[in-house]
Length: 350
Image (cartoon, rainbow, N blue to C red; front, top):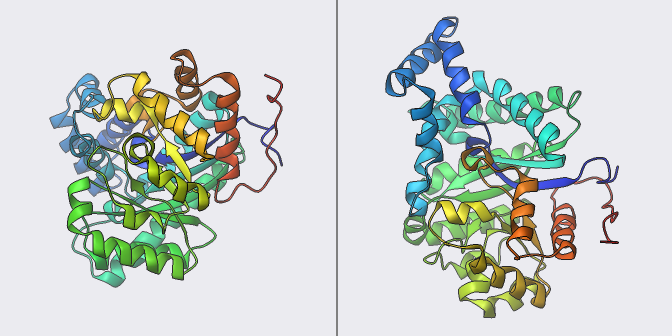
Protein backbone atom coordinates (compact mmCIF):
# COMPACT_ATOMS: atom_id res chain seq x y z
CA UNK A 1 0.00 0.00 0.00
CA UNK A 2 1.19 3.51 -0.80
CA UNK A 3 -0.37 6.89 -0.25
CA UNK A 4 -0.93 7.04 -4.01
CA UNK A 5 -4.25 5.27 -3.35
CA UNK A 6 -5.56 8.37 -1.61
CA UNK A 7 -3.87 11.66 -0.90
CA UNK A 8 -3.89 12.68 2.75
CA UNK A 9 -3.24 11.47 6.29
CA UNK A 10 -5.30 13.08 9.07
CA UNK A 11 -3.47 12.86 12.40
CA UNK A 12 -5.53 15.20 14.58
CA UNK A 13 -9.30 14.86 14.35
CA UNK A 14 -11.69 14.76 17.31
CA UNK A 15 -14.78 12.58 17.09
CA UNK A 16 -16.83 15.31 18.76
CA UNK A 17 -15.95 17.83 16.06
CA UNK A 18 -15.77 15.45 13.11
CA UNK A 19 -19.48 14.88 12.53
CA UNK A 20 -21.29 17.59 10.59
CA UNK A 21 -23.94 19.52 12.56
CA UNK A 22 -26.50 18.58 9.89
CA UNK A 23 -25.83 14.88 10.49
CA UNK A 24 -26.07 15.33 14.25
CA UNK A 25 -29.38 17.16 13.90
CA UNK A 26 -30.72 14.53 11.52
CA UNK A 27 -29.87 11.92 14.13
CA UNK A 28 -31.88 13.85 16.72
CA UNK A 29 -34.86 14.01 14.38
CA UNK A 30 -34.66 10.26 13.73
CA UNK A 31 -34.49 9.53 17.44
CA UNK A 32 -37.50 11.77 18.05
CA UNK A 33 -39.75 9.38 16.12
CA UNK A 34 -37.86 6.18 16.98
CA UNK A 35 -38.86 5.07 20.48
CA UNK A 36 -36.96 1.76 20.47
CA UNK A 37 -34.34 3.23 22.82
CA UNK A 38 -36.16 5.19 25.50
CA UNK A 39 -33.06 6.98 26.82
CA UNK A 40 -31.94 8.10 23.36
CA UNK A 41 -35.51 9.14 22.52
CA UNK A 42 -35.77 11.33 25.63
CA UNK A 43 -32.34 12.84 24.99
CA UNK A 44 -33.37 13.75 21.44
CA UNK A 45 -36.56 15.39 22.67
CA UNK A 46 -34.62 17.48 25.19
CA UNK A 47 -32.15 18.66 22.53
CA UNK A 48 -34.90 19.49 20.04
CA UNK A 49 -36.75 21.53 22.66
CA UNK A 50 -33.55 23.51 23.24
CA UNK A 51 -32.71 23.71 19.53
CA UNK A 52 -36.09 23.68 17.73
CA UNK A 53 -34.54 24.72 14.42
CA UNK A 54 -31.34 23.46 12.81
CA UNK A 55 -29.83 26.93 12.45
CA UNK A 56 -29.77 27.48 16.22
CA UNK A 57 -28.06 24.12 16.74
CA UNK A 58 -25.50 24.85 14.02
CA UNK A 59 -24.67 28.27 15.49
CA UNK A 60 -24.03 26.70 18.89
CA UNK A 61 -21.42 24.35 17.43
CA UNK A 62 -19.76 26.58 14.86
CA UNK A 63 -19.55 30.07 16.35
CA UNK A 64 -16.03 31.51 16.77
CA UNK A 65 -14.80 32.00 20.33
CA UNK A 66 -12.20 34.24 21.93
CA UNK A 67 -10.67 31.60 24.23
CA UNK A 68 -9.84 27.91 24.10
CA UNK A 69 -12.01 27.24 27.16
CA UNK A 70 -15.10 28.66 25.44
CA UNK A 71 -14.23 26.81 22.24
CA UNK A 72 -14.25 23.48 24.09
CA UNK A 73 -17.85 24.01 25.22
CA UNK A 74 -19.13 22.77 21.84
CA UNK A 75 -17.83 19.29 22.65
CA UNK A 76 -20.03 19.20 25.74
CA UNK A 77 -23.04 19.56 23.43
CA UNK A 78 -21.99 16.71 21.14
CA UNK A 79 -20.52 14.13 23.54
CA UNK A 80 -23.84 13.06 25.15
CA UNK A 81 -25.15 12.24 21.66
CA UNK A 82 -22.20 9.99 20.88
CA UNK A 83 -23.12 7.14 23.20
CA UNK A 84 -22.43 3.56 22.22
CA UNK A 85 -25.74 2.96 20.43
CA UNK A 86 -25.13 5.95 18.12
CA UNK A 87 -21.46 5.50 17.31
CA UNK A 88 -21.83 3.25 14.27
CA UNK A 89 -24.21 5.79 12.71
CA UNK A 90 -21.71 8.63 13.18
CA UNK A 91 -18.50 6.74 12.33
CA UNK A 92 -19.93 5.49 9.04
CA UNK A 93 -20.88 9.00 7.95
CA UNK A 94 -17.62 10.47 9.16
CA UNK A 95 -15.59 7.99 7.10
CA UNK A 96 -17.85 8.39 4.08
CA UNK A 97 -17.15 12.12 4.06
CA UNK A 98 -13.43 11.69 4.65
CA UNK A 99 -13.13 9.26 1.74
CA UNK A 100 -15.43 11.06 -0.69
CA UNK A 101 -14.55 14.70 -0.10
CA UNK A 102 -11.06 14.72 1.43
CA UNK A 103 -9.11 11.93 -0.29
CA UNK A 104 -8.11 10.57 3.12
CA UNK A 105 -5.96 7.43 3.07
CA UNK A 106 -5.18 7.29 6.78
CA UNK A 107 -7.14 8.56 9.78
CA UNK A 108 -6.40 8.67 13.48
CA UNK A 109 -9.65 9.52 15.28
CA UNK A 110 -9.30 10.77 18.83
CA UNK A 111 -11.87 11.10 21.58
CA UNK A 112 -12.42 10.73 25.31
CA UNK A 113 -14.36 7.50 25.94
CA UNK A 114 -15.17 8.50 29.53
CA UNK A 115 -17.31 11.41 28.30
CA UNK A 116 -19.40 8.96 26.26
CA UNK A 117 -20.49 6.62 29.04
CA UNK A 118 -23.13 7.08 31.80
CA UNK A 119 -22.13 8.97 34.93
CA UNK A 120 -21.89 7.40 38.36
CA UNK A 121 -20.31 4.09 37.37
CA UNK A 122 -17.77 2.26 39.49
CA UNK A 123 -14.20 2.19 38.12
CA UNK A 124 -14.63 -1.39 36.88
CA UNK A 125 -17.95 -0.56 35.23
CA UNK A 126 -16.51 2.56 33.64
CA UNK A 127 -13.51 0.65 32.32
CA UNK A 128 -15.76 -2.05 30.83
CA UNK A 129 -18.03 0.47 29.14
CA UNK A 130 -15.08 2.43 27.73
CA UNK A 131 -13.75 -0.78 26.23
CA UNK A 132 -17.15 -1.35 24.62
CA UNK A 133 -17.03 2.17 23.17
CA UNK A 134 -13.60 1.53 21.65
CA UNK A 135 -14.71 -1.83 20.26
CA UNK A 136 -17.87 -0.30 18.78
CA UNK A 137 -15.87 2.41 16.99
CA UNK A 138 -13.42 -0.19 15.67
CA UNK A 139 -16.18 -2.46 14.37
CA UNK A 140 -17.99 0.45 12.73
CA UNK A 141 -14.81 1.57 10.99
CA UNK A 142 -14.06 -1.98 9.86
CA UNK A 143 -17.54 -2.32 8.38
CA UNK A 144 -17.27 1.05 6.63
CA UNK A 145 -13.85 0.17 5.17
CA UNK A 146 -15.56 -2.12 2.65
CA UNK A 147 -16.97 0.98 0.99
CA UNK A 148 -14.42 3.53 2.12
CA UNK A 149 -10.96 1.90 2.32
CA UNK A 150 -9.29 4.18 4.83
CA UNK A 151 -6.60 2.91 7.19
CA UNK A 152 -8.21 3.73 10.52
CA UNK A 153 -7.08 3.73 14.14
CA UNK A 154 -8.02 5.40 17.41
CA UNK A 155 -6.35 7.69 19.93
CA UNK A 156 -7.87 7.86 23.41
CA UNK A 157 -7.90 11.30 25.04
CA UNK A 158 -7.35 11.90 28.70
CA UNK A 159 -8.55 15.28 29.96
CA UNK A 160 -6.85 17.86 32.16
CA UNK A 161 -10.14 18.40 34.05
CA UNK A 162 -10.45 14.76 35.13
CA UNK A 163 -8.83 13.35 38.23
CA UNK A 164 -5.76 11.16 37.96
CA UNK A 165 -7.62 7.92 38.67
CA UNK A 166 -10.11 8.50 35.85
CA UNK A 167 -7.39 9.47 33.38
CA UNK A 168 -5.50 6.34 34.39
CA UNK A 169 -8.59 4.25 33.54
CA UNK A 170 -8.52 5.76 30.05
CA UNK A 171 -4.80 5.06 29.77
CA UNK A 172 -5.26 1.45 30.90
CA UNK A 173 -8.04 1.01 28.34
CA UNK A 174 -5.57 2.04 25.63
CA UNK A 175 -2.98 -0.39 26.97
CA UNK A 176 -5.44 -3.29 26.95
CA UNK A 177 -6.65 -2.63 23.40
CA UNK A 178 -3.51 -2.32 21.23
CA UNK A 179 -5.24 -3.52 18.06
CA UNK A 180 -7.82 -0.77 18.22
CA UNK A 181 -5.85 2.04 19.89
CA UNK A 182 -2.58 3.44 18.58
CA UNK A 183 -1.84 6.15 21.16
CA UNK A 184 -2.90 8.23 24.14
CA UNK A 185 -3.59 11.97 24.14
CA UNK A 186 -4.41 14.70 26.66
CA UNK A 187 -6.76 17.62 26.03
CA UNK A 188 -8.55 20.27 28.05
CA UNK A 189 -8.22 23.91 29.10
CA UNK A 190 -4.86 25.40 30.01
CA UNK A 191 -5.96 26.32 33.54
CA UNK A 192 -6.54 22.66 34.38
CA UNK A 193 -3.15 21.74 32.93
CA UNK A 194 -1.49 24.12 35.37
CA UNK A 195 -3.48 22.81 38.34
CA UNK A 196 -2.76 19.16 37.53
CA UNK A 197 0.63 19.30 35.82
CA UNK A 198 2.35 16.92 38.26
CA UNK A 199 -0.36 14.28 37.75
CA UNK A 200 -0.21 14.77 33.98
CA UNK A 201 3.55 14.19 33.95
CA UNK A 202 3.10 11.02 36.01
CA UNK A 203 0.44 9.74 33.59
CA UNK A 204 2.68 10.32 30.59
CA UNK A 205 5.56 8.58 32.35
CA UNK A 206 3.27 5.61 32.91
CA UNK A 207 2.15 5.67 29.27
CA UNK A 208 5.74 5.45 28.07
CA UNK A 209 6.51 2.68 30.57
CA UNK A 210 3.55 0.74 29.13
CA UNK A 211 4.87 1.19 25.61
CA UNK A 212 2.15 3.55 24.38
CA UNK A 213 2.66 6.10 21.65
CA UNK A 214 1.85 9.58 22.89
CA UNK A 215 0.61 12.91 21.67
CA UNK A 216 -0.77 15.79 23.68
CA UNK A 217 -2.39 19.19 23.33
CA UNK A 218 0.47 21.44 24.30
CA UNK A 219 1.75 24.96 23.57
CA UNK A 220 -1.45 25.78 21.66
CA UNK A 221 -2.32 29.16 23.19
CA UNK A 222 -0.14 31.94 24.52
CA UNK A 223 -0.65 30.68 28.08
CA UNK A 224 0.15 27.02 27.38
CA UNK A 225 3.75 26.74 28.61
CA UNK A 226 4.27 23.16 29.78
CA UNK A 227 7.84 22.09 28.90
CA UNK A 228 7.85 19.20 31.41
CA UNK A 229 5.28 17.38 29.29
CA UNK A 230 7.21 17.73 26.04
CA UNK A 231 9.79 15.04 26.71
CA UNK A 232 7.10 12.34 26.94
CA UNK A 233 5.44 13.12 23.60
CA UNK A 234 6.03 11.35 20.29
CA UNK A 235 4.03 14.10 18.57
CA UNK A 236 2.90 17.52 19.77
CA UNK A 237 -0.75 18.45 19.43
CA UNK A 238 -0.66 22.01 18.03
CA UNK A 239 2.58 23.29 19.58
CA UNK A 240 2.52 26.55 17.62
CA UNK A 241 3.69 28.63 20.58
CA UNK A 242 7.03 26.79 20.55
CA UNK A 243 8.25 28.47 17.35
CA UNK A 244 6.30 31.66 18.11
CA UNK A 245 7.27 32.30 21.75
CA UNK A 246 9.80 29.65 22.82
CA UNK A 247 11.96 28.97 19.73
CA UNK A 248 14.86 27.73 21.88
CA UNK A 249 12.78 24.62 22.56
CA UNK A 250 12.85 23.75 18.86
CA UNK A 251 16.33 22.27 19.23
CA UNK A 252 14.99 19.68 21.68
CA UNK A 253 11.91 19.05 19.52
CA UNK A 254 14.15 18.43 16.50
CA UNK A 255 16.44 16.11 18.47
CA UNK A 256 13.46 14.03 19.60
CA UNK A 257 12.10 13.99 16.03
CA UNK A 258 8.77 15.23 17.29
CA UNK A 259 6.20 16.43 14.79
CA UNK A 260 3.80 19.33 15.34
CA UNK A 261 0.13 18.67 14.55
CA UNK A 262 -0.87 22.12 13.29
CA UNK A 263 -4.59 22.83 12.86
CA UNK A 264 -4.77 26.32 11.30
CA UNK A 265 -8.50 27.07 11.42
CA UNK A 266 -8.67 26.20 15.12
CA UNK A 267 -6.39 29.11 16.03
CA UNK A 268 -8.78 31.59 14.42
CA UNK A 269 -11.76 29.99 16.19
CA UNK A 270 -10.08 30.23 19.61
CA UNK A 271 -8.80 33.77 19.14
CA UNK A 272 -5.19 32.57 19.26
CA UNK A 273 -4.31 34.21 15.92
CA UNK A 274 -5.99 36.91 13.86
CA UNK A 275 -4.36 36.47 10.46
CA UNK A 276 -2.47 33.89 8.41
CA UNK A 277 0.61 36.11 8.59
CA UNK A 278 0.94 35.09 12.23
CA UNK A 279 1.33 31.46 11.15
CA UNK A 280 4.23 32.12 8.78
CA UNK A 281 6.87 32.04 11.56
CA UNK A 282 5.45 28.73 12.83
CA UNK A 283 6.30 27.00 9.57
CA UNK A 284 9.41 29.06 8.82
CA UNK A 285 11.15 28.41 12.16
CA UNK A 286 10.20 24.72 12.13
CA UNK A 287 11.48 24.20 8.59
CA UNK A 288 14.73 26.00 9.48
CA UNK A 289 15.25 23.73 12.51
CA UNK A 290 14.28 20.49 10.74
CA UNK A 291 11.04 20.04 12.70
CA UNK A 292 8.24 18.33 10.78
CA UNK A 293 4.70 19.69 10.65
CA UNK A 294 1.57 17.71 9.84
CA UNK A 295 -1.39 19.85 8.79
CA UNK A 296 -4.63 18.73 10.43
CA UNK A 297 -8.22 19.88 10.91
CA UNK A 298 -8.88 19.24 14.62
CA UNK A 299 -12.68 19.75 14.48
CA UNK A 300 -13.41 19.89 10.78
CA UNK A 301 -17.22 19.75 11.10
CA UNK A 302 -17.32 22.67 13.56
CA UNK A 303 -15.11 24.68 11.21
CA UNK A 304 -16.72 23.78 7.90
CA UNK A 305 -13.22 23.03 6.60
CA UNK A 306 -11.94 19.76 5.18
CA UNK A 307 -8.25 18.87 5.13
CA UNK A 308 -7.47 19.78 1.49
CA UNK A 309 -8.89 23.25 2.14
CA UNK A 310 -6.56 23.74 5.11
CA UNK A 311 -3.66 23.14 2.71
CA UNK A 312 -5.17 25.41 0.06
CA UNK A 313 -5.70 28.30 2.46
CA UNK A 314 -2.12 28.12 3.69
CA UNK A 315 -1.00 28.22 0.07
CA UNK A 316 -3.25 31.06 -1.07
CA UNK A 317 -2.37 33.19 1.97
CA UNK A 318 1.33 32.81 1.27
CA UNK A 319 2.15 30.76 4.36
CA UNK A 320 3.40 27.80 2.30
CA UNK A 321 4.54 27.27 -1.26
CA UNK A 322 3.77 24.08 -3.21
CA UNK A 323 6.95 22.29 -2.16
CA UNK A 324 6.44 23.10 1.50
CA UNK A 325 2.83 22.00 1.25
CA UNK A 326 3.95 18.64 -0.12
CA UNK A 327 6.57 18.39 2.62
CA UNK A 328 3.83 18.68 5.25
CA UNK A 329 1.62 16.16 3.46
CA UNK A 330 4.43 13.60 3.44
CA UNK A 331 5.32 14.35 7.08
CA UNK A 332 1.83 13.32 8.18
CA UNK A 333 2.29 9.83 6.69
CA UNK A 334 5.81 9.55 8.07
CA UNK A 335 4.70 10.41 11.63
CA UNK A 336 1.48 8.40 11.52
CA UNK A 337 1.38 5.85 14.33
CA UNK A 338 -0.09 3.05 12.21
CA UNK A 339 0.40 3.85 8.50
CA UNK A 340 1.36 0.45 7.02
CA UNK A 341 2.57 1.48 3.59
CA UNK A 342 4.99 3.65 1.74
CA UNK A 343 4.82 7.39 1.14
CA UNK A 344 4.57 8.33 -2.50
CA UNK A 345 6.39 11.42 -3.71
CA UNK A 346 4.44 11.90 -6.88
CA UNK A 347 4.24 15.64 -6.38
CA UNK A 348 7.97 16.16 -5.85
CA UNK A 349 8.19 17.58 -9.35
CA UNK A 350 6.07 20.59 -8.36
